[in-house]
Length: 495
Ligand SMILES: Cc1cc2nc3c(=O)[nH]c(=O)nc-3n(C[C@H](O)[C@H](O)[C@H](O)COP(=O)(O)OP(=O)(O)OC[C@H]3O[C@@H](n4cnc5c(N)ncnc54)[C@H](O)[C@@H]3O)c2cc1C
Image (cartoon, rainbow, N blue to C red; front, side, top):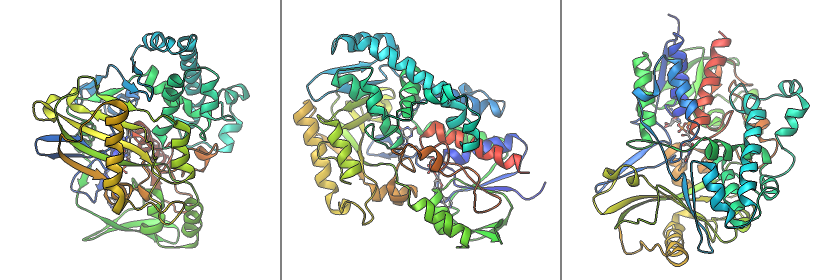
């Protein structure tokens, strides 16, 4: 066997690439700086509570089934993916509550009570979102990155179906009228760290994958996914070295010749970086002119939103809450203006609360709950736009959120928090190496984002590939899994 393929980072994209390559008979070494694999898909335990610290909503089950099939395995032998019901419970500022059911017909009947015709509008919206999925799937999601050439080959009628010329919100308003239905459908922009008022309507495809395809919970916690992929990679012969911080990728002219870690150097001509793409150009590559040019292009791209996270061990149980809960703000448009135009954490935030103890009771001591609370925020300011200082303001902001839950929704946990950890955008950057704490890489607010996003094959350095949330097809667990597949296919094709 020749030199190994080196993968830097054991996040989901890196593990997916490793599995694809090892299943194809390649020798693969994964170098991970942390003590554990999984990257952003982390977990922590404290005082009898357990939390997932990163992703909490898993969609697109077929993507994971496909990955296991690649290695001649069955997902069911590694993971128990439970379908969630309701998918999410939505609490609105006017006091109304909506359970979104896995069966769209049931949700449609519930929406009808907010505005006559919205039930039908919802079902028509889901058919439209499904059509976007059919029109965009192979060009923007499941295959190699889109180029002008691939687009030229697409039937013009299909291009129209991508609905790229209006915003998500404009499209949603053409189907449903009630604020409840509009806020529910607009919310899916946040799955790519974008705003429904700015992002192209093409992103309504995200509603399709969740509302038509369902939400899945891996029994034991979301981190079971990274554990299952790690197990599979090891079974296929992948060598995973944790605690191994890569310090540089070595080049001869513009071609990869090796990887340098603290204690060793590995000779290789094929590297997949499962690391934030900008960090690779900025910190891991020598500053040759081609690298500097690509870095200058990438740093101009707007990062996606970040998040303010509270991991709360809450005394007492809340039967009125489900596994996934959203407490909406009263003025969604203004909330997104705060995040993307004013560069401020929303003054009146939408608050997401996930409680895995609803599905896995052992995640919290009896009579208590493990709350993962997430609020969308701008990426860390780094001297741009806002000057919000998370280091001094995190405590105040957690009070804003908990006061709002108590006063607007009558869910008051303020005197019952037994243990808590807070993660701000700068903490996320430090923990996950996500530039400015952006959760989903580059922002999708711009119609051209899918074209500007880094491809999985470096244009500046030969033998360098990218898998992960900052490369095609974008952030989120299913998409980074696909990203690993695309990067692996490119490595194999270039052999
Ligand atoms: C709070 C939060 C909530 C989220 N919610 C959801 C959700 O509900 N649903 C969803 O689908 N997605 C969600 N996401 C996004 C999802 O978690 C990510 O898109 C995905 O996990 C990123 O995977 P990745 O392959 O890009 O690798 P990452 O997770 O970014 O991992 C990269 C790995 O590379 C390692 N590394 C970096 N530099 C080096 C180096 N120099 N040497 C060695 N190793 C290195 C890191 O330690 C890390 O392990 C969320 C993310 C966060 C943070």
